[in-house]
Image 1 (tube, rainbow, N blue to C red):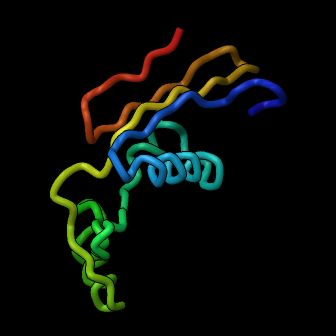
Image 2 (image 1 turned 180 degrees about the horizontal axis):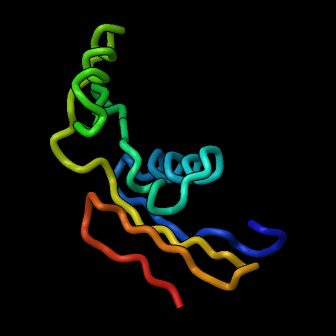
Length: 111
């Protein structure tokens, strides 16, 4: 929040990935300075309840091999890891800045 005003309106979907996805996306924006679209585009990794670490193929074979070499049970994900939309509210400029996850269909709209 900027003072007493909200800064983001967003949601991340994906079953048990949802709370992790919320943390992942907000961390990308707050800690790493990504804009809403960059935060949603960023590659994802998710630990499954059976102990498997799923990584998106965009991270590449080298990352997968490195995780396996460190003892992780890691595989490429075969489906999208979550999805989401974000609207950032820039109160000073009076504009809305939106991002929509490329992994799913959808659109971020504000008025």
